[in-house]
Length: 199
Ligand SMILES: CNc1ncnc2c1ncn2[C@@H]1O[C@H](COP(=O)(O)OP(=O)(O)OP(=O)(O)O)[C@@H](O)[C@H]1O
Picture: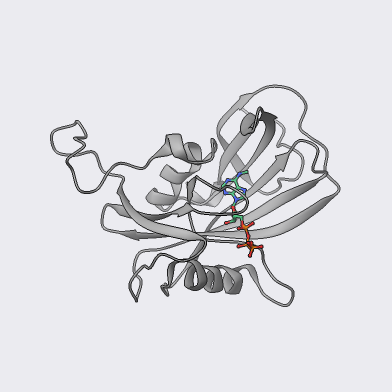
């Protein structure tokens, strides 16, 4: 089955999941950001964002790509600044996000690594914490477990769709449009795909 790609996405993509409704929001400019995830065995390092955009949510470590930097350089810098560690980051996917009323889109290059050096530290911006992406042997998570499952309910609405692809090492591309509901961003429409050569 073929379906039109959302505006702003291109390439040889295979739809993985889509949902929501309404028109895709218009944008006339992209702003470039990064987001980096470190995996160790069956655990993933997330950060609790203490300030700024996405405050009080868990996310990877990242921020704006600065003038003269490549996204990969920005991702390394942000991981060091926000979590205090160095990792051999590799490109894992690209996401386009729109928030209603902004007029510009976040273009986020996502990176991952399966090793790192240094010790994750709490910074002004982020509190690092390990989470498990493997179900426990018992099949039920117990609150006494030292490592809790990925806290999707405290993350951006879109993360549940693409984080499993990142963990599996499958490259992904997607778009998600958000609208404000009270003081919360809610995902109104989304489309995520994998890159064809990946199959
Ligand atoms: C809407 N759906 C989304 N889903 C998942 N992650 C999202 C996101 N939208 C933005 N992000 C991430 O949020 C961080 C913001 O970065 P942000 O703190 O503003 O940047 P930076 O560190 O450069 O800021 P300051 O230095 O404080 O100006 C950055 O990692 C970016 O990738």
